[in-house]
Length: 363
Ligand SMILES: Nc1ncnc2c1ncn2[C@@H]1O[C@H](COP(=O)(O)OP(=O)(O)O)[C@@H](O)[C@H]1O
Ligand SMILES: [Mg+2]
Image 1 (tube, rainbow, N blue to C red):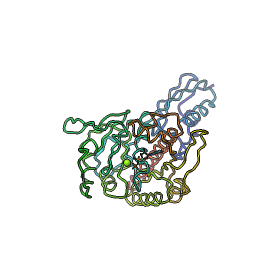
Image 2 (cartoon, rainbow, N blue to C red; image 1 turned 180 degrees about the horizontal axis):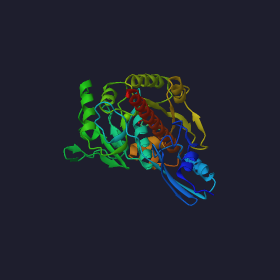
Image 3 (cartoon, rainbow, N blue to C red; image 1 turned 120 degrees about the vertical axis):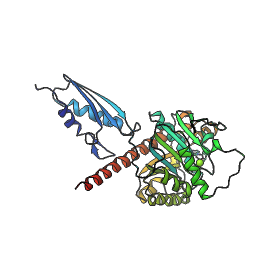
Image 4 (tube, rainbow, N blue to C red; image 1 turned 30 degrees about the vertical axis):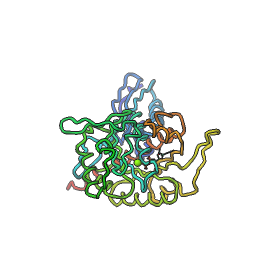
């Protein structure tokens, strides 16, 4: 039998299609370090996020396709991840942040901050370097949710160092303001403060920076979108019709700012019976899934109403850490994987667009 070669392995792996990116993993450049020793084949598959929702399926398909090549006796696949760098054309205050994802909502109290901290922790648990910027100038609540209220950040070489908690890097206006200090925010002040929180903080190298925006469609999202080109925005909504209507307005604003809407995440749409674990919808309003379909953006999942979520937020321990086996934690993990997948889709598509532009410019 002729010796196995690299081309045979690559040809077999062309049958493995990334279901989100709709291309095969060889064309996407995911296959690395192919090693062939007699019939033993090993290689790496470098995904665009450690939180890839289809990682296990892709691994299995790689193994099966290579195993089917005549002469192959064993296959070893190592799944790794390299988060793609945002493509930016304008000034970028965050060159070392690969992806910057804003979390927005039309109105307050829908669980935007809760979503931000739990998603951040899930991404960090999956191996990503994660930062959180609490840019909600009207109610910076994340220090409380992470149990580090009252901490004072240190500075180094003229830059403010984030506070590290549960494996994530956190900066909040809450650290920098006196708790009793009443601030009446005007538009230019909001923009200036957001700029400062981006530029004056030593974020280091991050795979994901999640930004908890103030509710509404005001100055903070506008200036953020201009200062640190966003990979995209996640819109959090609850099933109350009113909240849903406002959420679709904020989706429209981001589309106008040319910021991709990564999708809609619904919060508090269902309730899980503590006795029988039956999950039921509690409001009759438009669901997050219906709304996502009606405005043609991806649906990222729903997190149930669960006292464990609010209790743990109040105690400074996010619920994916305090109650990792309950349904809400599984729901946060699902939303986090979908957010990471959509962010990868946006960056890969942007890269292809740039390539097309480059091709057009060649005479
Ligand atoms: N899924 C949930 N189940 C129970 N309580 C929740 C859930 N999501 C959020 N909460 C609670 O609702 C309140 C508002 O959430 P928060 O994240 O502060 O909203 P926002 O940042 O949108 O104003 C908080 O007390 C939070 O603990
Ligand atoms: Mg909040």
